[in-house]
Length: 65
Image (cartoon, rainbow, N blue to C red; front, side):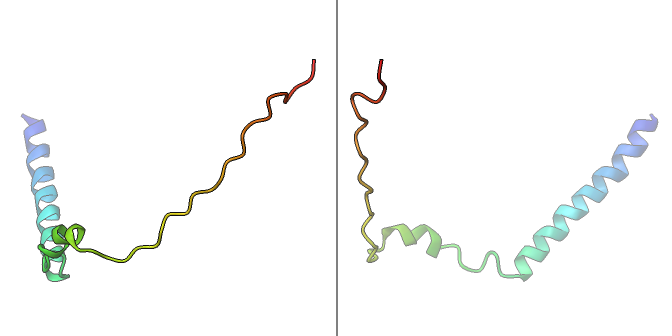
């Protein structure tokens, strides 16, 4: 019975913390533009070509007997 008396206030504090974090995110503008990030991958953008570094092959006789 004593565990319930401890868990109920802890859960209320935790829920209030999540609710406060949600209101902070809404006020700071985290949810203002929900469409653009999903559409960004569909747009054609000029990108720099990927540079490929040449790899030297290993020497066949790298060790001597």
